[in-house]
Length: 271
Image (spheres, rainbow, N blue to C red):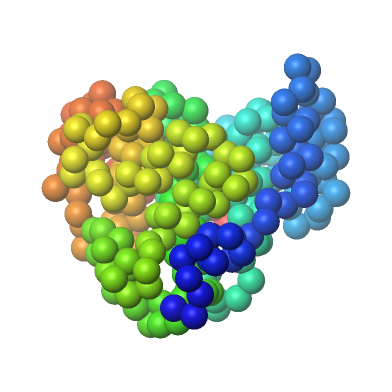
């Protein structure tokens, strides 16, 4: 690598966007101002249109047509809108990378949607946390794609591996999970998301991981979301190796989750 691990962690991570800081301050108020939140988002046309589009996604399933940011804030709630905005700003923070970067963000957006959908279906955890976790899970790959020589060439093979971390460490001196965690913390997101992201490749040991119950649930949702991605894209599955553990953590049977896959993947693709 042309840069050291410390240099990447200290200088290469995108800064927390100002609008996210302003939204965070508003959400910390005892009585948050929905109109102010709508105004902050609406001031950015691209951000506003993307929030409305996601609110109308079949994975959100509001059952009504959302026509404005204010409606999205009212019907989704502040926490979920904050999660959506965070993800949109994350994607915007990375410039370059070409088609591979677009593929990374497409997969991240679909995984986030799948995870939040299942969180709602099972009432497993807050859908906004599931969504944010799915978006940030592989954001360290985006950093490496831009900053690590040779990473772009290796990325297709890495994406097919159940756990590419060791290969990344051998070649580049650090792995994408370290970077993902660092960015989550730099942007002031909940620590439980950083913990779940740290463990998302350890799903075959899911029940024995020494982590908080909510983090374990997020890892299980991630496993489901990533399997849904593979099925949607028609690529090799890793599901049999951890299906039973994921089902137990989510309080369901493997057959129940198969039914969830069928329902999820039959939903219309958002325009």
